[in-house]
Amino acid sequence: MGVAWNKVSRLLAFVRAWLRTHWRRLLVLRDKLRLSEETLHICSAGVVGVVGGMANYVFNLLNELFRWLVLGSTADMVRIARDLEHLPVHKLLVPALGGLAAGAVLYWGLRLIGTPGRTNLLEVVVAGDGRLPLRGTLVGTTAAMVSINTGASIGREGAVIQLCATLASKLGQLMRWPPYRLRLLIACGAASGIAACYNAPIAGAVFAAQIVLGNFSMSLFAPLVFASVIAAVVSRSFFGIEPWYVVPEFEVTRLAQLPWFVVLGLLAGVCGAVFLKSLRLSEQLFLRIRLPLYGRLALAGLAVGLISLPFPEIWGNGYTATNELLGHGTSHASEIWMVLGLLVAKLVATSITVGAGTVGGVFTPTMFLGAATGCLLGQTLHAFGIPTPPTGAFVLVGMAGMLAATTHSPLLAMIIVFELSLNYSLMPPLMLACVLATLVARGLHTESVYTEPLRRKGLQLERESARLGAASEKTIGDLMREPVPPVRDDTPFRQVTERFLRSSYNHLPVVDRSQRLLGSVALHDLKEFLTAGYELDTVIASDVMRPPPPRLTPDQKLADVLPLLLASELRNVPVVNNLIENQLVGAIARAEALSLLSEAIAARSAPKIE
Figure 1 (spheres, helix red, strand yellow):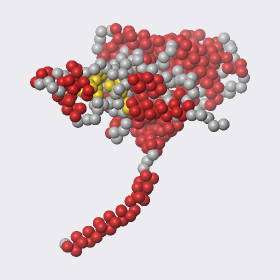
Figure 2: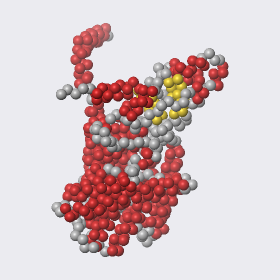
Figure 3: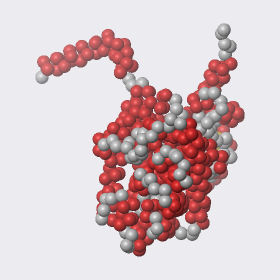
Figure 4: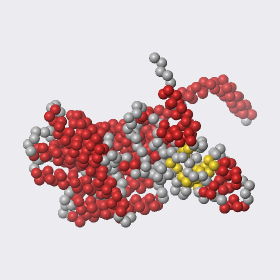
């Protein structure tokens, strides 16, 4: 035993001597092996891409299983609706009961899990800390699955994007990553969702960069591309790669062909603005209806069922009906009126479905509306004998134009429709129509389908700026960290003093039960109470707090809040989600922010050497 112990002692002594000699080399080696920030983002984006591709596959399997269990078929919803032509009561009941079931899942599911927090991924990125609640998303995904497979005029991509973004956010939360990384992970999740849903990796990266982050800087765009590519490849391993929409080949070789696509771009812009206004009107009307959520969704389902009696094509996201419009070549007047009726029916059905609060996406339904608009123009021109390109070309360009009009993003619309069709010959008219549709729609309706809900909450999304380099400017959200641990307004005075003794903060934020910022307690203000006796037992935080300090929101530019930072006496200035709801979501270190601003000012004012 003694001999063995001596050997161990000599070995340990040798290891200690070797470490004392080579510790500097070990530190250098550790620094070389440590992942850089960019490498860490790329690796995490790859993991998110795998998760996104798998989530899309599982979601599709569950959709087919649910449809088979409820409707006895895994066919497309339009085909199922047409099979029920001889059973009009079933066409009414299926969407109505589906809306009732989806509303019940949302209503009781959210009550069961309590307040889930913010679930709008754009709001969490723009005005939050990058934390999406998993339980709330699972409830919403289940409700979306019920709606999608019972005839609701909604797309599945919204649920997939939300699910992928939430799983990415949860991954970052488990790693205890700061908010700026969580927001990037959410964007990677959204990119992987789009790429997996549509088999469109370029569109996924552009969607996340332009719509979610509003930033095309390389440090952010590279992880988005990586997540999109991985998700698309994973999805292709299950579903293969085939163009979603097939259109006839044609070449734009004559200038005389372009004016008709100019007309189509103008029409798509008008239709897009009408669609956006109808979404807002429908939401306002349903808010006035004194019914619980499941009652409103059941009412919306019944309305969709009524509309589907003459137009069964409105069931689902419209993918099958869009493909039929692409192959449409007739110019009969009766068919033209049929397409017009289908356009109006789908617009009304989708507005009702979304306005009632149904969970899902509007990407594919929007493209269906654009397809009907393009088909209507193409058939009308052919009916008058005007030599024009095939109707399918107008259908596809109309899809892109309508998408550009509703998202106010012509680049995204061009790319996604190109990736869906794999038809490069249509790029010139696609570009022309998308730009015109966006300009017209913005002139008629200033907000897009994504920005309008945020504007109602007082959030400002400056996605464009005339200033050079505005895309790279820091925002409060970029610097935001965890908030100073707040105290509740009903916290006893002695507990408040204990919090100051256990921390180095000179101010503590005061919040209510809903995390609304009510004010702050300053260490300096407590001195006058220290000589008091038993009467302190009745004093609570709200009795000694100051009015709410100057607040910031994550969407504000750092340069715009310089006066507020200079006037503040707080070391950690509170950040709220917006100035209306006023919920505490973070804090920004005043010294760090002022240091960054001073460096930027010094860099701009430095004399140029000629």
